[in-house]
Length: 176
Image 1 (tube, rainbow, N blue to C red):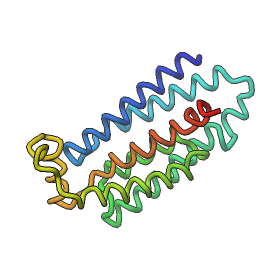
Image 2: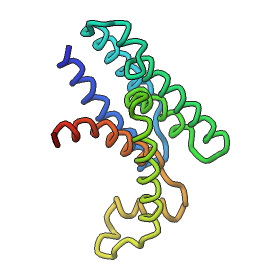
Image 3: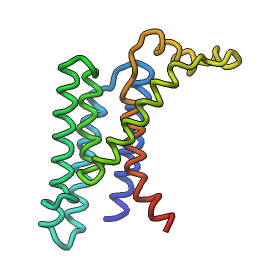
């Protein structure tokens, strides 16, 4: 089962990165990516339950599936509220659900902190001028277009914060 969980985790990272990339390029996040991420979470849940010695703890502990679902639903509700106030796009609001599922209840605080820091850094970076030697490159032309439109692809910031949150336990383990 650990190999299956690793494969699912790798696929989910790929899909999160794809969601960020499409948001950066088009200001849209396709619903198919959201559905695929939720399906991957469901597969991971089945793998965790099948490999668990204590199914009750795997399902209902705050660090288990119950905490993951609670975090996903809470973040989705927050995303819908931000969308209702026209602070977020619908894709960004929907992206909160799979992010919450994957980071879980234990990851909410680090994710919130990283989201705040990366959001502020993004807004500051968008105020900087693009250096002339690279201004003709497609990436920097897109950054200039984002700056001119004043529409920030928040999915990029959200995915960056989520992936850093997921990487924190691995980094901590490597530092020991």
